Image (tube, rainbow, N blue to C red; front, top):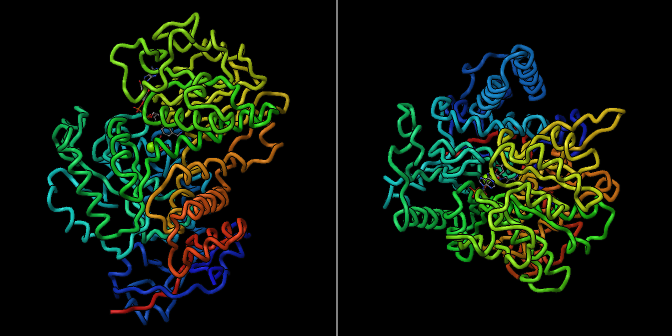
Length: 604
Ligand SMILES: NC(=O)c1ccc[n+]([C@@H]2O[C@H](COP(=O)([O-])OP(=O)(O)OC[C@H]3O[C@@H](n4cnc5c(N)ncnc54)[C@H](O)[C@@H]3O)[C@@H](O)[C@H]2O)c1
Ligand SMILES: O=C(O)C[C@H](O)C(=O)O
Ligand SMILES: [Mg+2]
């Protein structure tokens, strides 16, 4: 029974076939006439068939000719290509924003067409709707603002959220991405302008996981900003006050979480781009109460761990050799500490030793250098990873990146610092002395200008045999003589869509470490041996739906194993538990929404 898809699902089918897919089921609409044309969820522009125009009171509101979905698609792509031609020679910023605008206008007008072009061209469009361009959009959001998207809850709404949540027009919401704008990528506090991140992440949810766009909700919690420039900007659209702190802050987040839970008890809330102290505090506070996770801590950790295991395979070594890898992590924030915690757990699991013993191969560096127990005012969150000076002969508290790399000769140098260029020529050259046959450099900070180094510099200075990964996309590097330096994108986008979809379909009311670990292990084993040996650790963004189906199934199965699965829709926990691995993947895949024009049926 569960094999019957609710929506037409198609993955790698030729495009021409996609447009002539089986007739989709009807979609109920409670509006008529011009209201439908102005609602991007239902609007088909000139694509409304004449019979539907009659049924919905649209006759005369559109030019008479009916244009097919395929023609509309081609017309949009042609406009996009002309924009590319017309902006040649202009600055990257101008071109990127122009591309974002044309996509955003389509998003505002016709979601079905928007998501179709996004899904079919995800590799090309991800850098526009997601990192790096989304960072630029957030920086300029107040000026770019035309139409609202998502919901805004501000410090001024205290006491009102339980009723405000009912202002959202959709009856059902599956997936919420929430930010307070306090640490947007590596760009710092952008206040209300950070709403661009939940919007971009949810676009990835639709594209990668096929979450129905009528059931997503981007949310901004505006508790003020400490960004002086924004506070002084006349056009700034957020609260012009310093950020709330302490209990005042937490009471706002509590109220929001309770309001969401009251209206949509099954909705999953992804916390995104919160400054470190609140990222950890809110995760601790809510993870056993609500169905939520923190993507920067937990999603990033899973993606990084998959990459670290990939670097072991890239050296032609068995995974058990992970316990011998020396790994330097630069950045002791929510992302860096999340990665360390998960990687140490993996070492402990593989070697059968304690977490304490598993720590010895990891080195943590923050803005004040190597973190040791001798640090004054050692951050409690970083304390478990601080080195005992006895164990780091030849290195002192606060040692610089270059000192650590020269001394340790690590297998992996991984950056989550948010500081562009700190893996400078000297650091990269020092990685030539790595004890690994394929030293790995992960410059994971976003957006592009905040990456710890560029791909070109990494291959130029650290050597052609390295494995390279970055958080934002870079082009593969031409090494001459027909050789190519492969660029991996180590971004949490490979995991969060599957974590969300797998959890949703499992019906679990919590997201556990076991479910997250299953997601990471699934990604780690996704690539074939010959790919990892040539330095390809992650799949192409083109196959993100396939990756998400596998990751989602792994998460779902972990929820079943932990007896947390309560089922979803008509599919109960018993049916879930009887599905084989392949059947689970197929079940997840068949529940992905795919954009086609459904016949609209009006109901009062
Ligand atoms: N690729 C991904 O999937 C991914 C996921 C999450 C975060 N990130 C990126 O990671 C970066 C950090 O995110 P976060 O949430 O951990 O931020 P954060 O603000 O919590 O932490 C930043 C850390 O970097 C350290 N740091 C600052 N300057 C430094 C320097 N000069 N040398 C060494 N360390 C320095 C700080 O001390 C702090 O420990 C951001 O750029 C973000 O975009 C990438
Ligand atoms: O947003 C991204 O591209 C990844 C990550 O969540 C980040 O904060 O940088
Ligand atoms: Mg993030």
